[in-house]
Image 1 (cartoon, rainbow, N blue to C red):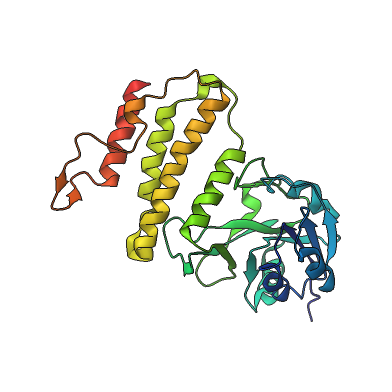
Image 2: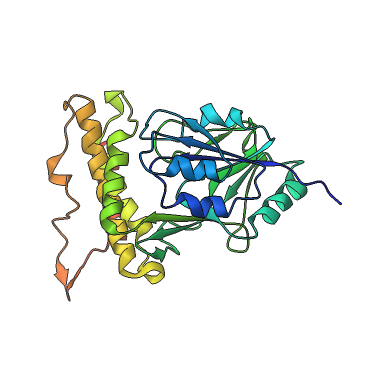
Length: 296
């Protein structure tokens, strides 16, 4: 019989009493579970300790990504699984992870796992939320996170040592992201306000943020998969690019031009036709990209 590989689980928490029990219930097989708690005021720490987790305390931070680099070395096992406190796994996750190590560890140091994301009770099937690969299972010492929110971590041993699992017939992370659209908007605002921005004013162009807003709407708008919720999500994430542009502009001292005629996602030539805009988002994005390319 092949010997099982011991796996360490690392989870960051902050007031996670409502979601942590499900995560812990689906990872009871991990030989080591480390909870990095950011000054929780609820029962998070008690829940973690009752489940046999090792609890470490850290300061409150807005972006946990880079903080992970400080705590991964705490793991005692060679293979590490990192999850957020509002994520969980399926019942067969242990067998699936063991199979990955057994079959691919000779040429793989890190695995990108697809993730099911839930928004307002709906599991997203498109809209840029699926398959949403996350590099979360890896050999200790081979992955490093970057500062900021949701930046793709680096595989230190090279891209060829990363394996992306092919959805849908594979292990998935399950993520209960947002209970409603209001929560979605609030968290996007928090991410934007606490993110890292390029300090070089020569690299700033508000027009780039506007063009990205249209491109983001085009990428996220998939009502065939996610219905009207897709429209809501795409709209929030398009405006997120505008808000980030304004935050970046202010951090640089409010010196660069904002091109106010293009600070709102409105195209003057777009006219209503049978209750819809004649120029749909894909065409608008294409026109804006050409416009800003001509300005460079």
